Structure formats: C-alpha cells, structure tokens
Length: 228
Image 1: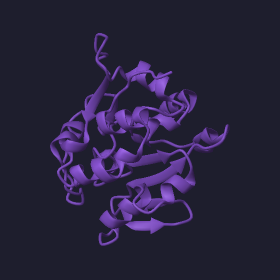
Image 2 (image 1 turned 60 degrees about the vertical axis):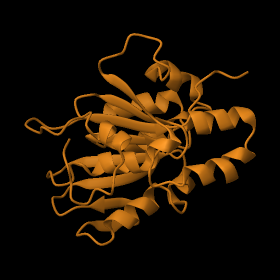
Image 3 (image 1 turned 45 degrees about the horizontal axis):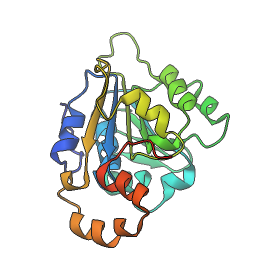
C-alpha cells in the first residue's frame, strides 16, 4: 500500500481497501457509516506525488458532491492547508507534481460523454447503486496511462445496498459471496462497527431506528437481499 502524507486517518477496513492496488475493480461498503466516502478519497490521493497522475471521483449529481460533509467538502478539509490548489470552475485539485483530483457527476443521459477526451488512472464512484451500469462501464474507456507509467489503473466504488442500481451492482460484485471470485474484482465488506470514529450506538438508536425495516437492514447490516 502506498502511503501519502496528506491521507487522513484510516480504520482497518479502509486499510484493507487501500492495499488492493493489484485488483482492477473494488467495491467497498455494505452498511451506512462504514467510511465509504473517506476510503474513496484516500485511494484517490495515494499517488498524487506522481507527475501527471489523474484521479476523478463521481457522485450522481453535482448537488450530491456539494453537500456539507460530502466528497468535495471532505477533500477541502484534507487539502486546504496543503500546497494543492483548488479550481472551483473545473472542480479540480492540482498538486505540485501536476497530479490532479477532479470531482464529476453523471446525472443525465449524455453526461458520460463530457469525459470522452479525458484520461484517468483512478476512477471512483460514491454510492454506486445510484448509477446506471452503462455509465459505470463507459468510464472504463477513460482509464488508461502512458507507456512507462507504473501507476496502477484502478476502478473503485462505495455503496450501500438498495437504489436503482442494486441488482446490477450485486450481480457484478457478488457481495454475498455465492460465486467463484473473479480475480480482477473484489468486495470489501464494511459495517458501522468497523468505523471507530463513528458513534455507532447513537447512530443506530437515533437515526437508523427511524427507517422502514427493509432500508434499515440495508443500511445497518449491509443486507443485499432482493426485496420485493
């Protein structure tokens, strides 16, 4: 696992996630509160000391990106006191090495073509079950590197069960472990209690307890059962 001095604190499941450089695709998560967004951000920052390294993190909409505590906000907390520079027009951090971390969204039918001429070595999707499979698969065409560049090509995602993409994500990553593992694809299961920085008991009692039983099982237990 490559360590970077600007990487925020990590729990053990996040460390497991970060150590999978040799795996093409990794899905992190299951339950809410397992540190998914932080894990995706940490992974994106692992190679920012490498010249011309390019990473991008997606949410479904720009509004999702811009919410307090969401990906862009968390990145500002980590990077605002470093030598990285923020461009609000392109939603991109640029590092002294010339590496970049960009934030994007894929809300509408043709949004994926906005990135048609782009090249990334790291592509991350936060809340993958909110996306359509074709958008996820299309972004593989943007994952490439130049000759002599040894940075690993990584596709990473975090999500809870449920959402419009529940079935395709479940089929692709097999989070229940019912099939023979695909060498190039992994699922790292993370639950609320795996995150020592969250007040798990209070979150379960005062927040998740208000959900309907199906959604609560998805968010609290990471239950990938297909509900009717």
